[in-house]
Structures are given as C-alpha cells and as structure tokens.
Length: 572
Image 1 (cartoon, rainbow, N blue to C red):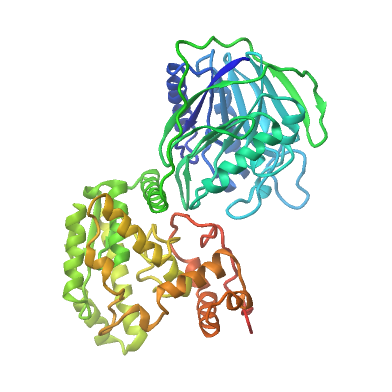
Image 2: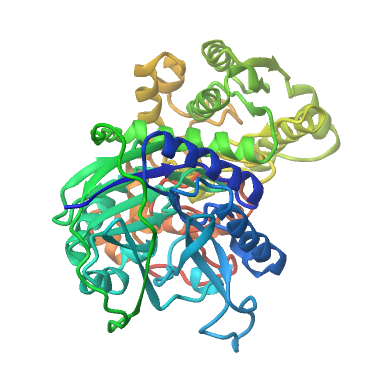
C-alpha cells in the first residue's frame, strides 16, 4: 500500500495582498519540504485572501491572481506537489441578469509541480447563505480533477464541496480515488468542530477515501477563521487535527490504496479529468507520528476568536494601537483584556471619562483594569463639557443621558485623530439587539470586539480569563451593570435581567423563532412582545454600528440582514 506524506499549511492570509500571500506560500513550502512532505495543501483563496467580495468584479485583481499562481509555480520547490487556492476566471466578471452561467470568475485551486501548474480545479458547490454570497460572484465548476501521485489517485475539492452531499465527493467515490484534499476558508462559530468533524467523516465514507481538510486561520473584517484542520481515514476515523487560531504545519503519513481506475469523462453529476505527476521523492527517514490537538473549551475558544479577530483587524489595517473608554464596567474591562491579549498592554490606551453621575468605585475599577492589563490610562472628566452643552441647550431626561454618551464618543474619536489609535467600542450583542446603546456615543468606534457576544457570555468570559491570570477587576464582574447616566441607574431599570433576555434574543435572532414560537417555548408573553418590539425598531442603529468579530450562527451585519424600514411586527 503506497504511503504519501501530506502537509496541511494552516496559514493566515490578507485579502488583496497577493504578493505577500505568495511569499507566505513560498515560506511554508520550505517548511513542508524540511518536514519531508511530498504534498502540501494551502487553504481556499490563499493567494488573494478570503473573502474577496466585489474585488471579484475587478478584472485587474483577477489578472493579478492568475499571474501570481503562474509565477508561484516556478518559485516553489519543483519536487513538492503544492495545492493552493486562488481566484481564476474563464470569462468576464458576472454582471446583470444575462451574465453567462457557464463562464466567469472561479473559486479555484491549482496544483503546482515541476515549475508549472500541473492541474486546476474549480469549486463546484457555491454557498449562498449566512455570510456567503458566492452565487453572486462565481460560476461553479463541473469537472472533478484527479491527480495520480506516486501511484495514488488524489481528488481536489474546495470548501463548500464538502458541506453538501453528492457532487465532488460522490463522484470521487465512483472514480475510486484514495484521497480527497479539501481546501477551506470556513469561518469560525462557537462549537463548529462539533459539526465539522462528523461532516468530514461522512464525506470520507461517501467517497470511500481518506479526506484531508485544511482550513484558513486569522481574522478578516468581521470573520475569523480557526484552523482546526482535520485528516480522517476512509472509514471516518480521526487521524490528525491541527490547533485552533494557530498558524502551523500539520504533517501526516497516509497509507492509501493504489490507483485502480483510469476512467474519465461523464460520471453523472460531474465530469472527471485525470492527470499524473512524475514520481515524487521517496519518504526520508522514519514515519511521522500524527498529532491530534485537543479542542479548546467554550470560553477559551471564544476568547481565542475575539483576540484573533481584533489583532488581525488592527494589524491588517495598519494600526499600531487602540483606545477605549474604561468605565469600570464589565464590558469595557473585558474589551480591554481582549486588547491586551491581542496587542500587548503598551499598545492599549484606556481613558476614563467620568461625569457627575459616575461613582467613585467605577473610577477605581477602571484604574484597576488598567493596572492589571499594564495599559496606558488617563482620566478626562466630561463634566465641564456637559455643563457647557446644557448651558446652551434645553435638554433633559433621555436626551441629557445620551448627550453624556456622545461627549464620550467625541472625546474618544478626537484622541484617535490626535494619536492615530483605533477606537474600540464596547457594546455587547444584547445591548445592540434591543437598542440599549447611543448612536455616535458608546457606539462610536472603528471595531467592536463584543458585537456578537451576549451579556451573559461576557460574564462567563471574564470569569474564565481570570482563571488564566488576573486581568479583569472582580468588582467589575460582580457589581450590577449600569450606564451611570443618571442617579442610581441600573440596566434593569430599562431591560429585563440578562438571564431572561439573552435566551429570548437567542431564539429570535439566532434561531429566527417568531412570537408564537417563543411564547410556546415558555417565555413570558408580555416580555416577548416588549423585547421583539425593541429589537425590531433598533435595526437602524445596528446598521451604523462598528464591525465586530462573528462568533455565533447569526451575527448582526453579515448574517442577519433586515430592512430598516419595516412595518411587519411579530404577534400584531
């Protein structure tokens, strides 16, 4: 039985940085060669980064991608088989209803060997749900590429091809391949491996072949990719798994059946095209022991996603430092801790902006948060600014409360302009859901790490992070949450307890449950009516909120897209 040494390069790319991504491929190819690999596979759209969105329609960008893959073929080690994702096209960008359905931009992979592109494959299944709009951008491929490598038939597929039954994996089974390589840019969601691993095992059994699943790692705008690359045997047994949120090379020796079929042409759902590579060098030295990295716990997993998402948003957009308002509350303390873990305390600036309603303990908690994180800390009282506004405007009640938040937003943005910091906003998903946030006030910012994190999870993350090392003041965790915009104010003056609110929001937002279904599930009918109305009328606020890392199945923005002008109301 032939043996192939396969390396999965779990790497962090940057959208649009074609030359930088190509350099990354060259570097990791050298590492794979040093590890004795015969084949190395990189994630989906490695050369362009993912997702490229409407860059797909820019012919110069497509041309840059195509030129890069051809050039890269002459730059990688000639004896190494390199599978890399890129953007290709066999026609013009798709525009209008009459756009050709059989030609256009392609989500593609290339197999590089011997100084040339030895084979190509175009993604067959194009996802059009959640954060994906690939039917808008790409034309599906109709041919499964099978490459014979040292006597083993290897089929190559891209991301969604593994998420759907039939198609490439069913055809791979009929083509009698020994291995299917699946390259991915699969965004993170909490506990996604609970779905991913059984899925890969099912496809392996469908194809009757071993499956190697390599995934992207790193942050791209709201999305974060967790790696978690997987290799399973033909019967679905887990052979190797990479870490989460880490760049790494997973090397595994696979004992695979020898090729038995040379059939090509129509295999029902797809065509099959075959090619063969010249013999690759024999395996050097002893066999490689596969690694199975342990899964992270829920809080550690989410924390890793939030740290990765923030770090890469800052780094990839050219910022060096961040600034945030430190109120002494749980949300700002957790955002400060995420920023410290992502960037180091010396690159994090906290500013306390007390008003006449701010409690002394809140300022103490803010100072403690800065001390624990080793971050820069300043105090900028907003009382005189608030008084100047009030002396010239007749405001009271909610308008006066929101004025304080807007002054704080203005201070943060002004310090950002002065010093070049990226402003972090600190509102959590629960607050954004019900509109308990002030436009151009506490919502002001360039990035929001907690945008997809419900309030109850914020507390869990804080408690978990302090088990690693003390970073969040205990008083910020234990005290009742308050915006401190009027005397003795608590969140529960305006909202139900978060322990009641968050499960209801999960049903309505993440699961798309309607009013009747939520009431039937046991939620208080009056509370359902009240909360759903709050969520519905706050859509215009969320549309103007800062981007933030997606960790759930239904994040605001890319996932959940509702009209701002909308008269439909649940239960009315």
